[in-house]
Amino acid sequence: MSQLKYKRILLKLSGEALNGGDKGQVIDFNILDNYAVEIKKIADAGVQVAVVIGGGNIFRGASVEKSGIDRVQGDHMGMLATVINGMAVQSSLEKHGLKTRLMSAIKMEQVCEPLIRRRAIRHLERGRVVIFGAGTGNPYFTTDTTAGLRAVESEAEVVLKGTRVDGVYTADPEKDAQATKYDRLTFDEALNKNLKIMDLTAFTLCKENNVPIIVFDMNKPGNLFDLVMGKTVGTLISN
Ligand code: UDP
Image (cartoon, rainbow, N blue to C red):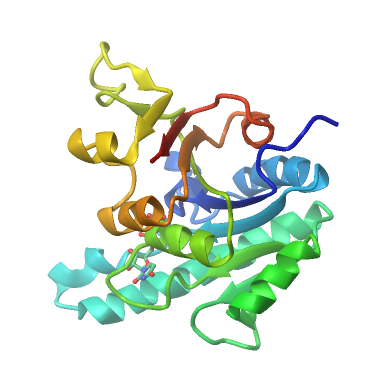
């Protein structure tokens, strides 16, 4: 087996990607099955895997502000949505034979473990896939920021942001035929070009703590494995 480039990774999956497009489902379990297959490949190769899952397929806090619902209340609803997704991810991974732990930043001990950093690291060392639920536990943040924070805290070497596109482009490739993909960017270049890769809080956290981000297509089989083996996939953003 060739050398692993990354031994501990933080995989960020968007909640929105789980709804399977226009099929009207909240969670498409076929998508989760596909993710589980890809995650199993890297876990079997010896990579320690932490996952942060979003909640956008169920609820986004900011979306209810217009209805007069308090933002903080909405954000808590959004964080609970990420726990629902986390439970779905956990079940899929376990179905594929992986050992997992779901840890929540908001205590709900009947459902999952409370987030304790040292315990999370221990789980990773023992080969369990750790799913971080409930975002940061605080309103006004996002699950991208959670991904950056948990990567730094759990000493992951990289944030792998799984998306539906194969990297970062000069412009929206669906609207501009001239758009080209970047293989590499520095954090400063991405900021100066105002490329919307992650929100600024997430970006700053990764930049200041020197954790690179790779944006890649999570739906292409083998991509995740190739990435941890050090192949050029997607767009790498680093200092
Ligand atoms: N959220 C929050 N604090 C966090 C993470 C998430 O308040 O630390 C809430 C926020 O309302 C957000 C929702 O949870 O809209 C779902 O997360 P996100 O929008 O990041 O999910 P994604 O876009 O990845 O599906």
